Length: 447
Image (cartoon, one colour):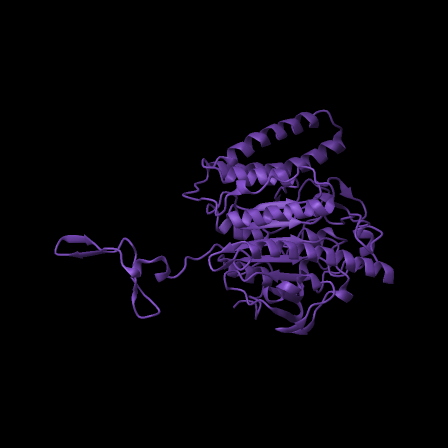
């Protein structure tokens, strides 16, 4: 029995009176009403939205500090969520400070480690990504331990300019130091996976495994017909498939208890398998993130707007005449910087699109956004210099009241980003004593 705010008691419907060997069930009492006891805790979700190629730093940082701040031109799409976001400044990954180009920074954005330089045969991030620490801590509570999503297909081969395999540029989620997690890039495939996960027999893992068996078999047949260089590329691809194979096997055998989807997934129309353009593709994938969280099919998700060195052409965006990567190498040209900023702002607007969907999804006395942490980040600040200092990072959602949003927090220069990962894990309910080069939780972030 619990004491209520008005001095009365909150009773369970199962409360009985016991004494002298007699057990007597109580009649229904007002104290047994659902509102008489504290509301059940809602699940906490965590998502990471990764934007490649850094930002125009001249238009990123807000004015003001703490709660008294004004959003920058690039962050303007977040104006309706100002009270629900945290802008975090001066964070970085020290382990990547002297790495070449993009890959060392971007593959390790969530591990805060230094990846091993390789042509592709021995991938090693030298750490587990923050999202997977969270996923492993709550394994078994949802049908899908985590969801890894992207837009661009897996890249193979070697970037000869820096001597790293391009595979590194396709992954930010690592379940072990040597295991990057395969991403889904087809929105319909994501939907079908979520739909199967919510089925009454919980057999999504078995169906995924059958499909994967066919894919692996076809890849092995193809490998036998290829030359040495192409065989290596197939081997890279197979290493990613093996990580998916292991997860689907766990999904098909793991206990799910009495899990049920929080919303019916069949009320949402199946998305297009082949989106007409990049913008539609992004929105469909963000719809899938929202659906996964609202249904509680998973509580951990990463989404890559593009691979490292993304060269998506933004000519369809008003005011832009070229590709993302080209504009990021602006050489301080005013016109390129202007277009670079417009591309950054477009990505922030997509972030706001997801926040809006999560805010509209009611849950308990609040919304799914209130019970989530949605991170938006790039592994570079100035893309022209491949600068790993002052990373552009925004965190939205209150994590069930654990995050003190509505602030622009400026930390000492070169504060470890790992401190934020440690803080988020704490808010998620998966606290760690240390994460990579962390020195403690970030002051002012936890409520």
